Length: 52
Image (cartoon, rainbow, N blue to C red; front, side, top):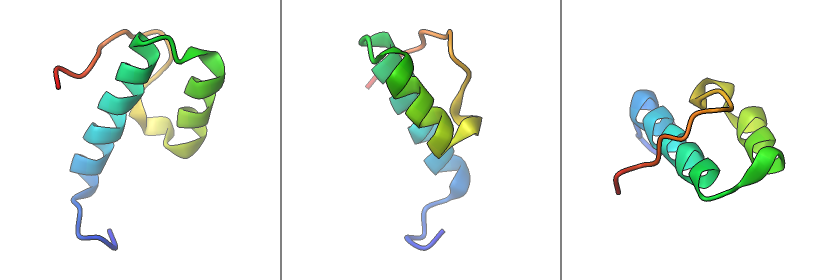
């Protein structure tokens, strides 16, 4: 990627952020935005939050 970030690392970080937002009550609208930005970052329904 342009900033030199490994795509796998970027996807993992985005996936963790998405799960954390969902766990904190982000709702369907926010999750739909994540889906639009990066569909590979996880399906709706999981509640795995980042340990960080």
